[in-house]
Length: 280
Image (cartoon, rainbow, N blue to C red; front, side):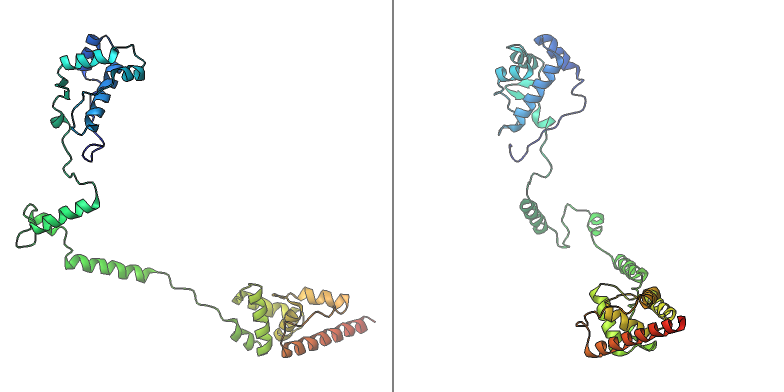
């Protein structure tokens, strides 16, 4: 890379330029080979420290690259010299055809240094001499623009959807006559099973408990005893028909919860016996 530049300009129409056809005719070569050699000449001239110089082209290697007969590249270069494309081992009018970039710095540090130099050269009004007043003011935010931005931010904040309120099932359970301890035990069981209590779930529990002939407190006590996160009347009715269930472990319940569970099991047993007597 020469002087921080690792590219060169390739002008439109180069491939169809008739002078390459004339060079090909004079050198006894194919037009495609002439264009390829010209591209190699430009690339070498761009890569040299002395940009534009092209005296070091390897003719033999280029012939091999193109699959051309020996001496083809040398004849093409000589024909280019005769057409004025190469003068004194330099691409003719290189500086005109390949002007330097307007900004030659290649790093952010160099760009920042150039900016500081421009600021030091600024006039008394703080605006660089080469910058027009219109351009300078275009980079300043007016109070009106600032106010417009603030209004847009405020409008966005107002249009945000409000967060859904969090449902607390405990007051609902207590309102349906569930003992505080039973409610706490059942909610802890639901949390352990990662089952959220929603208003719909609570209403369904009330309905199912009524179908089974139980209060909500009694139904939840059975849930705590058996580790149920939910409740359905059919589960209890099926157990009543099948006889008393095996005694489950109540180690996860509090003392009050265990007492409630034992009372409920006794109640279920009495209900089963009453049904058997009714059928008898």
